[in-house]
Image (tube, rainbow, N blue to C red; front, top):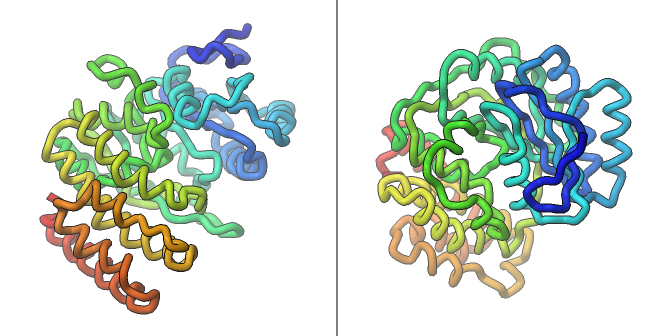
Amino acid sequence: MSQLSPTGHSLAQSEPPRTPLLTLAIPTFNRSRDLQRLLEMLAPQLAGQDSVELLISDNASTDGTPALLESFRRDGLKFRLIRNDLNIGPDANFEQCFTQAAGKYVWIFGDDDVIIPDALSAIVKLLTSDEFDLVHLRGRRYEEGTALPPLERPPKVEIIRDAETFALRTHVFLTFITANIIHRERVLSVPHPPFSELNGSNLGQLGWTYTALKHFRKGACVLDDLIYAGDDDRGGYLLFRVFGPQLKTITETWLAKPELVRIVMNGTVQVFFPDYVLRSKLRAHEFNGKSPNHLLQSAFASNYRYYVYVYPLLKLPGSLGRGWKFLCRIVNRLDKAAGNPLLR
């Protein structure tokens, strides 16, 4: 049986199972090589996992994605496929994954990210053990050819019962879509604006993520690295706009609670931007004359952290910039050990 998605031009193939515990949803577009790597890692972990639905939302790929998916289906991988007739954009494809998921929880997984062996069973066990509005996973950057270590013991987990503590643990990393497992049923049961309002923002996933945090009761942070993030550097100069003014506006509007907004934005300045600014500067040779300073100042001019953590990296030459970033990292580690007073 087939059905139209809310976009009106997408075709879903096969029926979802009846309320699985977890929908693992993969939005994809023209990255068949990355998708193949991910599915090869997932296939053995999904074998026998009746409580997990695999949903793949193909955003009208023109490469070998359809043939790849058919080959996995022939080899026995069970999944539900949504094949868009037109490319609806990444945010709308993420929203489609969230709304079309059948699971109590939904885990939207980037097609260029990877999961370590045996991690899925640990996640299922965690979700079965209790009710969580949000589960956040730690990850590290994946480099091609990296040998992923299997999970040899149950991962360490911190159970958190207040939104402020959860924000202190996660802050800017709430934007990393693969890092967050959302209690979909809970999110859909509480008031929220239409998620489609964030389509085109490059941060569409924050609609349901911030809704879960705003109405937070209990969450879990997995402290071991179960996922590795693909090294996708397509953001470029646009990323400064996305993680500067756009993130600030979305966070203030959707999260709303001042103490949570402050923590997320402070984490963005303090933790994310020092590394990204220096990497971008070194790769772009002083940004090729197009400094992001005006964009970042429009979002962070009133935040002293910008002038401590970010502005020097925009102005210092590469070697001194590396030293400054190292100092920022040391300060952040000390801040974390002290309970994150600088993020508050």
